[in-house]
Image (tube, one colour):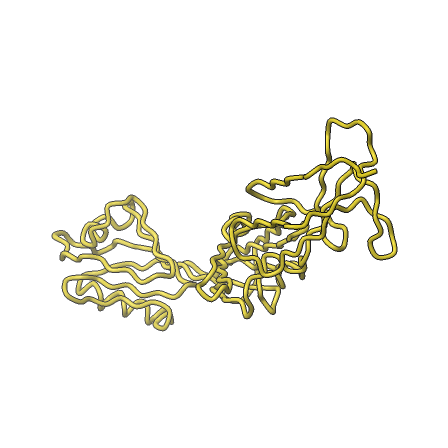
Length: 288
């Protein structure tokens, strides 16, 4: 069961470092681009190559390339790019290449570099509240999470994906419930060290009723009908039948509403996120 668990997200924008204009000249396209990249000292960050009639562009996550029709229309036609503005960021790309029919001399495109150390131009902090209640299925719980994605693996461990420029921090109880040993995660993919525990901390459900006489529970009196064990229940539907029912004295002579309340052993109300809870009560006449 979850009770008002929180997630804190910090979204970071990349910080602009430098912008370079690559000006094209006559000659082999790949050779001259590689030469200019080398002059800029970006050989390890950005590479152009040609293979089997394709131009292959490999770039690191901190590099962005920007082609615009207004500055390199013939180059974009040669690369079969039809957009007015086309951006490459982080992922390798392949373009079918046809030698330009007209000269591309004087055309330009931009190479933009970003700083890779964790300095931010803008930082947005968001605290998300996971609704309290008992979640019967992992999917019901995971859909409450925003900005990050979670999935359950075959071994009941939780997979976590944190998108770029984001840091996520789980509350202590939520971290333990999801099976992680750490509470802070930056961009990347993670897998929990322990299995998901949807009902962590709940071993019994205490059922209370307002029309019965109080009975002794421990060292105090309570309007309690039954203590139902629920530990290790994995089915979507839980059914508990009691072959020998317990009867309690009804303290009210007249009533038209019966209030039933379910709580944990610590007294926290249990709220079911989905599905129905059905309770069948049996009445009998008092034996005099």
